[in-house]
Length: 265
Length: 346
Image (tube, rainbow over all chains, first blue to last red; front, side):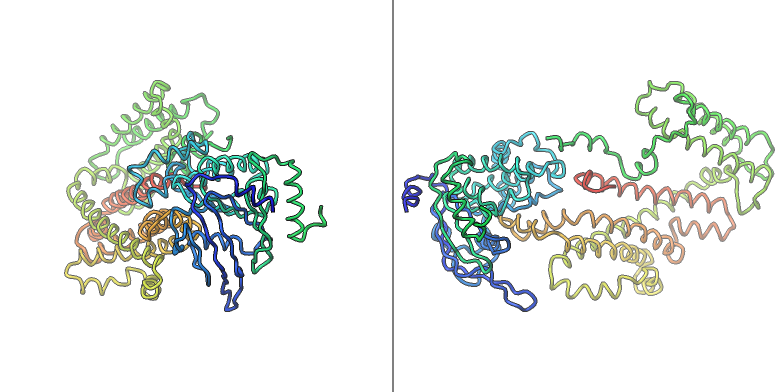
């Protein structure tokens, strides 16, 4: 495909790590029944790439992200970050969840400082917290408590809390899923800008085909549970992208078709 | 950015019990009088109380009647001056305005009390002493009363601190570790609901001194609610918080100290309040039965001598101490849980 050649031609800064997902299968035990969620999932991510994972609700995309984050171990298969197997959570792979899950007893600044504090390096690196808050435009709210923030602001704080660790792989688990559509559009552009500036590898789980196409280099489409890869589609358009781009509309039609929704188009 | 309202919430920074008692409504009880009207009436009521002390002769033999009247006049004068000075006193004036209805009502109550006891004896005398006889206790029996206060505070503080600390640590360990929970939970179930006072007879002969026995009982009464609530607080912390902390590189100690405990703290405080209440009960009983010191013992002693005024005096001190301790705990909570303002209705 031409698409692959074009994606290849784009160069990425060296900050991001590569990610190899090698024959991952996973299942849950629910009341003694084994419920398979991931079935032999296999793909590679180049350093600095932006991958969107698309699939029907409940298909196991979020489980895959938890495995990548190291919060759970897969039943079989290996995950490699820059060639080294993933054995547990590590701040080079940071997750932004669908809910901001800010700690309500900490101010915005202290929430963002969480990672550095947990790693015991906050004292010497306080300016990184300020910088991360600057990056998401919330410096003025450093002393606010989470309940005083709007949904979009809270999610920006969550983003800053992740970015302050200078992750090599940023894992986004539907981070914009609960935001209103205007905030969502704004934050999509912000995420692209941050990604281009910082050069980390990004994995985004989303339900929103348009969002996936607007943000990602590659869109991986999953089947219903247990999730299997249905298609791996390169999005061969430069940034900043335009939502009305006919090429994106075409890809969108393809993807909706893969998800069994072509009748709506 | 309209959702941000830090200044508004901070402006509400007022302790909870005060909010409930006073600030809730500005008490339009001022009977549509001009500002300070209630203050003037309160001042008059205190004059009335002073006069009621002097107007009729005492039907008993009390030495502090004149001093009490003098004190009433002084209070009246102070209220009057403060009311007249008005806005020049700033914050103090606002506080006075808010409390003026209470000052008025307490003067009326004292007058009624004075008249019903010392002057006409409507209430049977030895059992209902007049205000001046209670003042007499505070002036003449002060050393013994102070000793008792000191003993009570010492016993209560020691037992409470031990109980709260042990309860908190136990609660955190049960909530955190499944194996600790396995062993401690049944013990807690079995022993916890037993009223601490039921241990009294055993405690007093197994412990080397009645003081250590009482400390143990107070600690027990405090420890149970603190343990249970700390435990349920830690157990109810959302897994999402742990996930976030773990992906950011948190070690288990961080998860306990910086995630589980802060998240559980609102529950812990409920336990501390409950523990405080039940430990007061144990304190008084322990002092009455075993320890030969403290306000509980003073009550018992006064009853033995039919010194009813001393009993009332000790009761008043006791209630001041207990409510003072509760207030202190409220203040501490307000400090530590400032983030809850705006999340939870206090």
